[in-house]
Amino acid sequence: MIAKPLRSWAAPLAAAAVTATLALVDLPQAHAQRSFEEAIFGRPVGFQPAHEARVRSTTNRHAAYSQEPGLIEEVPTSRRRGTPVREVASEEIIYEDGFEGGAYEEDCADCSGHCPPNVGRMFWARGEYLYWWTKGMDVPPLVTTSTAGGTGALGAAGTNVVFGDDLINNDGRSGAKFTLGWELFTSTPSSFEISYFGLDKEEASFSLDTPANTTVGRPFFNINPDTGIARQDAVIVSQPTNFSGAVHVDATTELNGGEALLRWTMCEATCSNTEMLLGYRFLRLDDSIHIRQDTRAESTAGGLVVGTTINLFDLIESENEFHGIEFGTASKHYRGRWTLETLAKLAIGSTRSTTTIGGNTTTSVPAVSSANSNGGLLSQDSNIGTHEYDSFTVVPELGLSLKYDITSCLQASLGYSFLYWSKVGRAGEQIDTDVNLTQQPPGPTTGDLRPIFPEASNDFWAQGINAGLEWTF
Image (tube, rainbow, N blue to C red; front, side, top):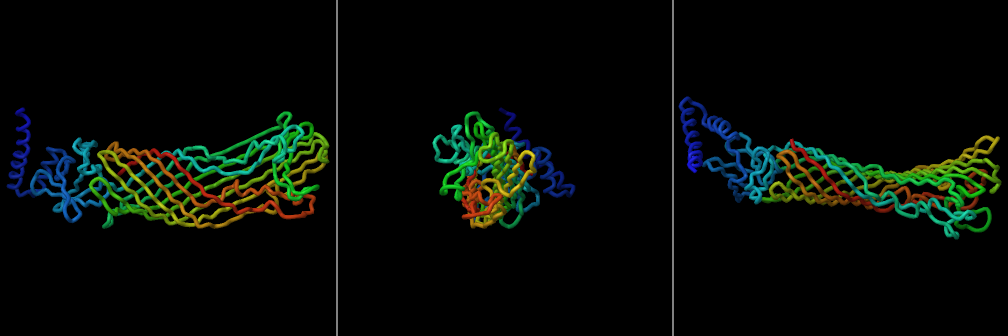
């Protein structure tokens, strides 16, 4: 019980004695005070622990007062977390913070100040793990099955769609996001930040190879059949006794993007602050659908020589690139080590959608050379090529994250993000299932030129969970 009062008196008395002694030998008093406090207390002169009183001035700046008269730190209220504050009458860097040796003072939990770390926030790097879901790609019916004597045409008795006529590539998948930022040290607290994110490629695959007692077909609408009127039809892939064969479908989706943002503090209260955001946003969405068919004639059905093989493919690829100006706000609310951040951004710009359609058919007859022709089934001369169009689009994003200061330099976060893209061209939506087969050799081409490039567009979204670490240095 006696030791505590003695210790509380000993430090001021010792400080006064050392200061007076050094003054006699003509040493600056500020140097004496700094050297003594650093030696005895292990902290820079004027260091302000979290539990010491803080008051707000009428000039929108607040002063942190130590227990020693005359040591007043003037601290801007509109500054980023953890930036150093300076004494008005000295160049000695001090920190308004709640960390003592890498941990918060217990008295800081009431948020009398928002307790930023005790290091200057010069640069920061953040890495995040993403698990996101995206809106699926709509594709028409691409593969059907029917009974042994069936045709595989849509609407025919016994026909079932086994791939397509649905959304694909809409499952959750992993990704990553990386952010690097630095302070700009302007008159208004501001910073510059760049980021990049990407999701793993999502793939949907389907294969079917000569199932027993089943006809496999590739459906389309035949606008110019050899006989009769335009109707639902199908190219036979395999059929018992007549054809053997296989069909393979591979569909992929990829999403990535980046930002370059200027952030500046608009207002700051004791336990919160709001930043304005302005910059540039980039997004890219790629889709592809590759259909491969291999068929062998096992009889003379259809007028083919036994052993004739038909190998064909259709390829539809789409690329969507968005470039635009982005603005928004980010608000942070502090409570001890915890930070709750809300984010709202809107990008306005242009999306260029590029679709490439290609195909080829190789027919090989025994004892006769092979013949190649341009186009498969859903790719013909009428739609093969590269097609581009531009659209005015908007890309809003909302985010919510909860952060925790592990140390004065390391912060963990867990959050949710929702991203919306108003107009994109997906590969599955660029497939026209109306086909005029007279474009294939030997011709001649009669009737309407189909399929065409439909220039279809739709909206797109991505949402998911983010978990990351941020290092400040």
